[in-house]
Length: 283
Image (cartoon, rainbow, N blue to C red; front, side, top):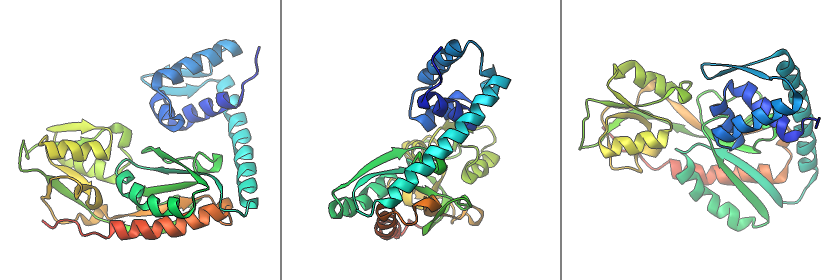
């Protein structure tokens, strides 16, 4: 029997963190079918099930719980080692992995241009995901995300405040709503909109898709101003005070002395702040 390898440990850790194949697939950057296939192959090699499946929820078996604990320990140790090695490298060269959301991608991409030009030996890896990366396992070096409550385990810089409002187009059915589906149920604007949609809603699985659907006339949507201004839509409400948020640039404390992370956070956050400062349309 072949012992579980590092990819196997990442698989079970992602399944445990997301409690299902869809969230694990997002974290691993893989297709859902690939996650199922890899899990079945691992269970076949070990000769026993690692998870009980029920209505899409994955509950670890006793063997699975043991492997999850071992995976968390190994991945945490590996991540700590990688961060220490990165911090020891005083040159502004090497790999730098960045994760962000689909709604911020167009603006962040523009903010990356001067950094890449100034530091051509830094190899950027950009991942788009609505799930928060596990920075302790070094899933990413820097996370650029909209959030009102950044994790206490991370350090970072608040780049800019973000206002949310209800937007709509001048075509289609403005009495209907475009809302985010259950995969984004933790997003405050998703809960706010669903509480008011009263069943007449089109569901999408990303903020960008909500803006696209809104612009096409499928209904009104709650969107951040920085995203809404990229589409031919107009605000139907003033900014919603209870949804006020911010764009943050976050990293693990072990990276506070890593040159390429420090330079990235300082230079890209300044460029991103300038791009986010463009005024959003008023109601």
